[in-house]
Length: 294
Image (tube, rainbow, N blue to C red; front, side, top):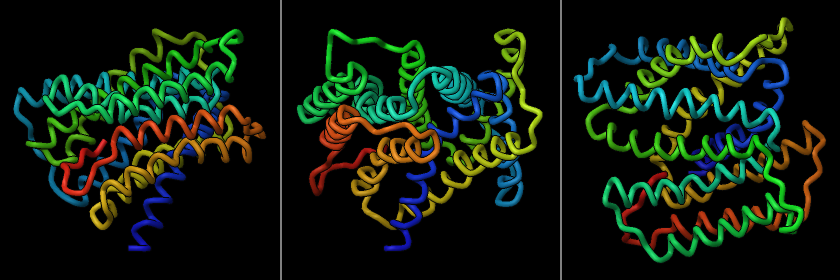
């Protein structure tokens, strides 16, 4: 049990650090090019893993259409908007906004999957919104200035929630590795023409260390960490693991302080507590209730 929690904590640290990693990478690579390159290395990793573990599985036409939609919305647009947003958005604020994904997922699940929408979820949403106000407005409504990058991060959050809903639907018929592999291949293929359509001139680093950092973070964040999480989540209580994943914004804060020398403000701490508290309140399940894994 202790070993499982240790590995899950490692995953949370990796995912929380990804906001800082992304902030660093967009300084050396154009966002769309960075998206395509990252997806390329993720796909290569997943293809190698799939070849090692099992043969490639075929999907029917109906599921293929859903996978295409998932690849475009949940993979390409999700990753592209993330890097576009991080060009100007603060990584800590971005992490806090994305931390509200479980709430939006719950609302979408109530609409499309007919899951129950509880009073606790609505209360948690209000608490989280108060937290976002503290972080974005810095506690002063008169000085409210929404960075353009944060709007892209909101799009990242929306597409991430859509990806979770669609993955949940597909997982009833297709195994997770096949869904992940096919959707990432589709996202990668779709992204290629946009590299030349959206960005002129392209920014691309010629430094070997930048490329090593790009490849390493792509494989570790989206490949290895995800596999470790999926392998260890079965050994712990799902509700406790969900709460553990809410530590990502705090990891982003600490990594931003260590790597980017960005000080942690009081309003960020207050906002973080409200946001994480709202998410926990929304997703908390009493003993005996059905657990929803967001």
